Length: 585
Ligand code: ADP
Image (cartoon, rainbow, N blue to C red; front, side, top):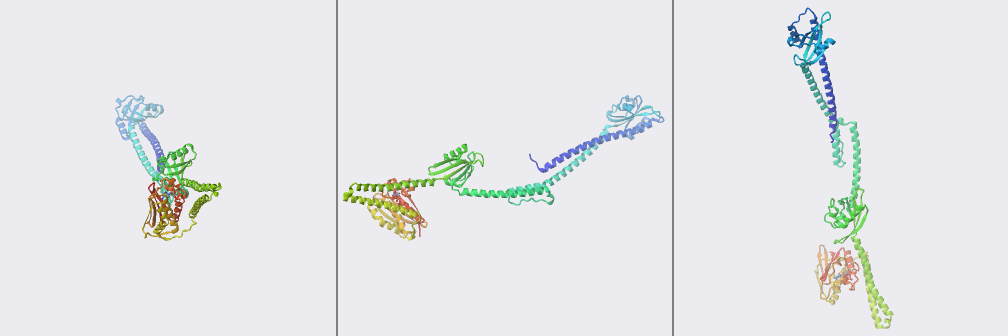
């Protein structure tokens, strides 16, 4: 567990200092004890010596009162013992009740060494005593007895105790003062570090941009602290520069990802999506765009996406698959590659929308097959006609004339097709300039009816114009717009059985004019509806009709060149409605 620097400095110092002080205290106490005992012995000895010299004088008569008197004034027990160990006088006890003292350790030592010391339990008084005994010698040097002076040990102990108490009290005071001093010093020493830590914490929360310098008093600036501040200052600048560089990089990458039309996903080894750009949701028409943290199977419900991811995860190899999503009719190329540089098992998934390419490929293929088909029929018929002529029909003038007429019709239809194709490509490439002028929608519809009304009549169809003559004018090239209405009207006549009705209408709508050519004819199958504006596209039912399949393609290009748009609605066997919108003048 980590602890503060302050306590790391203070606690060991206080600990070691306390140990040193306690050891010193104990040693001092032991020494003082020894010194005290020593001085007590010396004191007892000097008193004993004085009394012994007094007792050695043969003229001195010592009574029990004298002994008692000396004992009281010295505060010590005095015992007088004769050579044989019999107690003659004792300041604290009746000598007749006392046993022979010759074997007392202090007396034995005094006999052998001249001075006897002992610290022991007194059999007479029943307490711990300190004894000093010396022999009493006559003038001739003969031992006439022994003098023993004693002091209760308890008295000594009490004095020692008060000495130790004073010592412990002063030790405690010294340790307490030391503790306060050490804590104060440690706090003073660590304050700059705490201030620096606070400033650094603020700095990192501000993204290494703010001025982080800690507020330190001059006294808190030491060489080490100044070096630390300098080093950190340098580090901050470096980090700031690196963060900026990283942010720029990240912004670039995020801008690329945001704008990319391809979908990008980063998936971890558990299948959880770590990153996804907006193109994914857009491409797959997903309403929920919040993918991060969800699993791939939750987001990309099509099993092939999950399979592709699993294969790459297991094989660590790049996989590419083309996924067709029904009913959205989407063709998505899914590329999965291992991205081990980020983390083990991470996989990059790239989604490319190939629906448009697929569609264009189909259109191109159909276009070629349609144009071949359109050319083959008249060419085959021309070939048959010329062969018939060669094989002898030339000699039959009426038949030859009939065949020539047919040849002319086929050539006309071919040249009509070629001129329509040419016109379409000229409109597409913008080579046909539009001569725009304000023009009445009603007039356009009227002119179409004037031109094609007879055909409709012959086909047994009723034609209705549903348009207010005062409908706002459109800004258009009249001849081109007549061509559009003409094409739609012509189709309506072609694909409506006798007895049906064709309605041509125009009405203002949001600053535009909405034109409509509606018929009650055969209608268009739903699967063909999105494709009828393609070049040469014909529904199966229209294959036999004489058209080229270019009329609607031309109409679409003309309308779009005017800044408008065209579409069709139809219910099979009930009729079709072709709408187009042209801006008002
Ligand atoms: P076409 O010269 O064959 O009429 P278009 O481009 O004008 O060529 O039309 C393309 C195809 O669209 C037609 O062949 C037909 O199948 C379908 N179509 C166009 N108009 C109608 C309509 N009013 N009713 C039914 N089908 C139509």
